[in-house]
Amino acid sequence: MVSGAAILSNVRAEPIQCALHDRVLGLGATPGERYWRSILLTSGEGAILHKGQTHSLTAPSLAWIPWEDDHVFKIKAGCVGYQFVIGDPVLANAIGHNPESADLRYLMDRRVVAPLHQAPETVRDAENAFDLIVRETHNPRSGSWTMVQAQVRAILVFLWRMSGPDDLAILTQGPSLRILQHFRQLLETHFRDRWPIQSYADTIGISADRLNDICRRELGRAPLQLVHERVIHEARLRLERSSQTVEQVAGSLGFRDVGHFSRFFKSKVSLPPGAYRDRATRSRTGGAEMQQSNYSDWP
Image 1 (cartoon, one colour):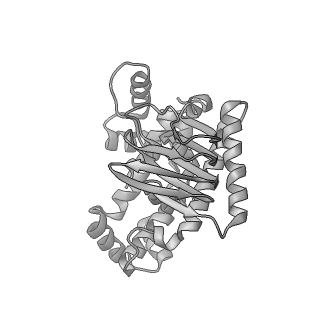
Image 2: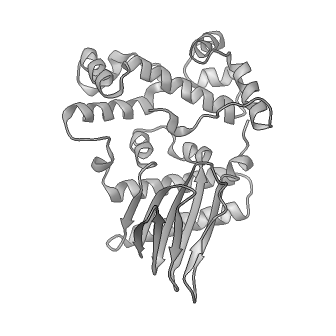
């Protein structure tokens, strides 16, 4: 299981204060691991350099970048603001499960730069969110990881709003893909409620056959398979990273009893839940190798 303190180890945050000279800023992220970086500039200019390309940042602006080892962040003298990098556990908790989660999950792997010249209230709100992240990570206490994930969620919502929710829907040209996006949003909200596919189709206002056709054409899987994958993905995350018992995980995912959950989980993962958790724990402590679940694994 992963504690709040362990999750906070995936967060690096600091204020940006560049007085006299241009600087290259790093945050000590572990090479080879997956991280995302967010930058708020309230004064001055900076730039992201990647593979020979330069992406300029001019204050006030808010940026979100899926970070790679060969990215470089440069700022000019006099630049002021904040920055953080986060790993997958914090991002997963921040995005959560609500109707907007599907859009936020799509946003998380895009580079987004939102100018804030016409949004002074968002500048103030984002500055407060970044400041809280810095303080809670530098001086952790009870509930710090909950506070941090809440502020990361707020920053993602700021970016989503500034970018335009309709623009962040997956390839929203055409009615079929808008239906697919609606299905994803409903699935984020109701996958724990064990909705039948007909309920998703009825809520969208189409037939179950049409929903099936769209999912198979665009994603190569039937709607029920997507529902099962979402449930399994959530089960794996909770078994790997929470202190919930197997019985509690089963109940939180809408299973009528732990036996039903165990059979379902084993049919999809080839291990019963308890054995899967034991293997994940050994993997983290240097035993058997096992790829941990990432939040972006689910389609």
